[in-house]
Length: 249
Image (tube, rainbow, N blue to C red; front, side, top):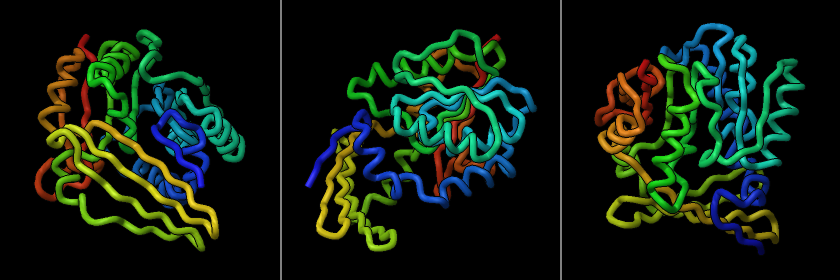
């Protein structure tokens, strides 16, 4: 039995990879980039895929003619992203860096942070700093798209343990609300034959109002919130909390 705690542990990303990044997730990214009005960018746009993981969005972005840089702190995930690019016959730049410290001032037209890759630092000021880093990476008029599971959505979905099966492997996920809904903890138990692995993640969860205020405090303007990548309203039918904002000129 092994246990990993926190998103900083590379063993977590490799050990739980099949559940974190199933093939459906890659197919979903391709579909979103083909159909979403929120993810339509001019060819050649310099794009930062922050917390890119194994290149779920990096590859299809590059395939659409964008100039993509994938940034992640996990060497294992970056290696998978590089191999995915090679297999797809596309080019992308990759940087191993922590989102807390990565700033390339005015280097990008677009910054993407997808699939709830935001809010994992213990200090809430650090999460605010990551948002400021995203702002500083953009040129004036550059656009941010930030996708998370909103607090309002999670409140509908935090239920008894979830069970997911992939072939013979079984994952049990238990979610616990912390600090009056400021944070959420997910505990995972993965059973592979006689082997049992455990992992835990704790992250800050944000309502639409909270995330909007953070973006404005980070210097963004034209802040908009949507309930999905199709541009639907953020209401009781919302599937995601997608924030779009612009760096002021």
